[in-house]
Image (cartoon, rainbow, N blue to C red; front, side, top):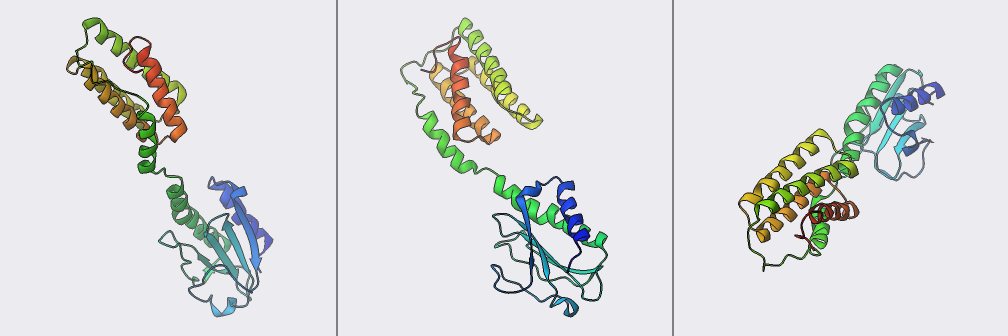
Length: 242
C-alpha cells in the first residue's frame, strides 16, 4: 500500500507543475472489474499490492503506482501514453525511492498528459473558418462601385485601419506573434488603397479580417465581435461596409 506521505508528495507535484489539482481524482484499486486494459503485469513482488491511481477527470489518462510488499520505497508504475487510443504503456520494472517515482510522474505530466491537453485545447481552424463565413456573408459587397479612392478617402481609410488596430488591442489579449501578424496584415491593407478600387479593397479587407480571426483562434462569438469592430472602425470615416 502506497504511504499517505508518498500520495501527498504526488499531489504536491501536480500543483508544483502548474496543473489544477481539482481536475484530478485518486482512488485505490485492490482488484475487480476495470474500465481500462492492462498490457502487462507488475513485477511479481507487487502483483497482489493495492494500486494507487491518479486519474485526470473525464479522460482516459491515469498514472498508476504500486509499492513492493517488501518495501515502501520500491515502486512500479503504469500510465497512459499520448499515442492513438492512449493505451497504458505497461508496468515498469522496479523504481527505487520516492524521488525517482516523482520524477517518473513529472515526466508523465510534462510529456503525455500535457500533450493530450494541448491537443484538446487547440482550436479547429477549419470549423472556425466555416463559422466565420456565415458572418462574412452578412457583409454585402456591391459590385457597382468600382471607382478608386480619392486622396481624402485614402487618408480616411488609413485612419480607420489604425482605429481598428487599437480596437483589437483593447478587446483581445494579444501575444507578440499575434500583434506582429495583425500589424503586417493591416499595414498591407492600408497600402492597398493606392492600387485597388473600392470593390476589390473591401474584398481584401474581409479576407484579411478572416485571416486575423483564424490567427487569434477566436470562436464564432469573438469572430462576430472582430468583424463588428472592423465595420465600426471603417464606417467611422467611410461607408464602405453597410
